[in-house]
Image (cartoon, rainbow, N blue to C red; front, side):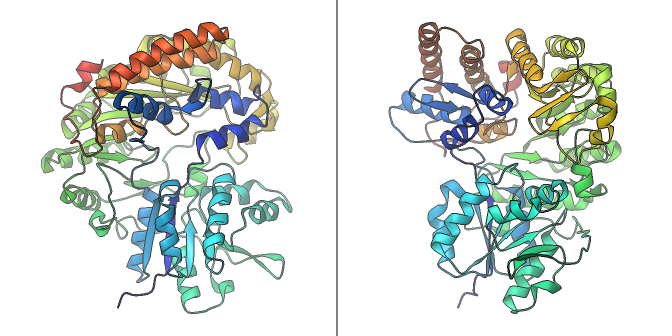
Length: 557
């Protein structure tokens, strides 16, 4: 007889784009938040489509049916897979839901088994909306199950809220138990065990929950979970289709203290997995037989630098049949490392450049120089590794001059793809300690400081987008850099991806340039026709084997 289900972990809920667009439009189409979103969709008149929606639209027209081949986030959610593995090692029967929007029938079946709790991760959320939807759904299908919510959304609410604001924020979510801890997996296992033994939640550390109408906070005990002892065995999910692309991590936290980022504060000191552990996990991916892409989500995969070279050498020695992608710091590299990357299977990197201005890089505490960025991108191109440069516009100290330096940097270095986002004035980040110095006022999407305000920053991003012709824009909503290994795993080539992105860039230009409606629709039809023609060569089924990438970068460059 099968053991009773103890916990269901839910990985990711991407609110349908139409609903999210309507949510942000309430703030006004000229608001910073909505203008930021406009860089991630095209308006075809009858409907607005994010880039995944656009891909499905042209693919459907090319094939003459209405099916959706591509899904945002359709790779194993690392937080959910990790938590499931962790709980199972504690002897707790656990299953996970990867994509809430696409796996609701399976979730209903699991809720019918009366698990003790459902755990919701919040890695990618900055508002409660996606969690609200899941909580309401769970309540409809099982009113008794306990709902546990943890992760960055809860930690940010707890750190940034004042007075009764935190109680209001979690009450709005509507769950039963909240984990407030930078890691939280050990606390979650203790919650499930407590529920299983009908114990006292008050004895479990790092919790917040309502009791008799009042918010109760249990004692704080900092977690320090070993990455070596909790490596994921990807063979442990035989009943789930993991697909061709899998995410992993070899470290927790970040060695740097960039002044716009609070991740090191939340995650604690940099913690590293051993080389043996990394090899063991990659071995488990390889044994699956159909995994062709590994995505390393470490904030700085190439730090510590000697360790990074050893990881590359290990992958070369093991002859893994894997393409890999990662975050990468050009400022901490040399040509030998990039040669090792290429030989070990690296096909693309996310470069957190942030700015092409030495002044702004200093203000950001980036520990990087424009010269090192420039040389790094040159080496990466030389060795056939795709580059995506992520930029921030509007950081304290930003001026017309420093924005132009960033524009010039992109035009001169020509990364394959780039994007600039408006600086998000987030409480709890190190730059907040300099609010008086920079005369910072406001927070979130709406702010001003001594040299710029948030609306000016959005104007500069408009100008940047319309000026730069040497690199293609890669949107954030539902797409981002990590869509590339996913699509490669679905059988697209880098050349096909670039062809699609070129026409998508042209469509987005029509939105940002604000052309007259008749001109816009006429040009849209032309670009859509080009996209549909290109899509006719895309794989006709997700079962199509992905193409080898050995020569693709040269073809797509």
